Length: 156
Image 1 (cartoon, rainbow, N blue to C red):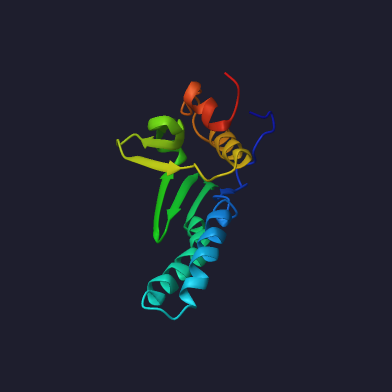
Image 2 (image 1 turned 30 degrees about the horizontal axis):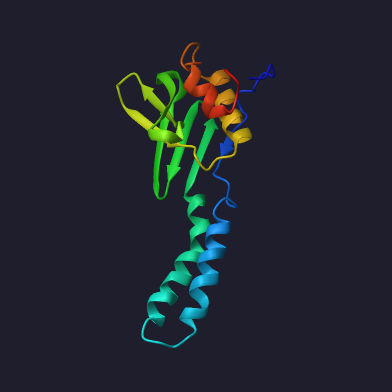
């Protein structure tokens, strides 16, 4: 992707875009808030919908991917998975249905697979993540195929 050499001590962290869910959250708040303040029999249900709508954009902050210090670490909620970069066997893009590729699948030599959802991650951050993996992982691990180019928003 780029010809810059990534120093071994540099850490790259990638997170989903927190502003991606704001239009949906705003719509949910605009619909639910007046009904929650109504005081009718369904007010508690709409009050819960207000809370969920207000907290929904914060859900994207539960995913974090970090490449650095010889490890790739993925945090999903309270669960953290780390794979040493020297043990990686393959990094491929994968998807399902009409959305196209939206996940990076990392597989180590033991056959353990780690799926990283990148649908809500900015294209620029996806490119930074894959570039960091290319620079720090053993040669040939990151498979440059059509699916990966599509995931990164590159032509071809």
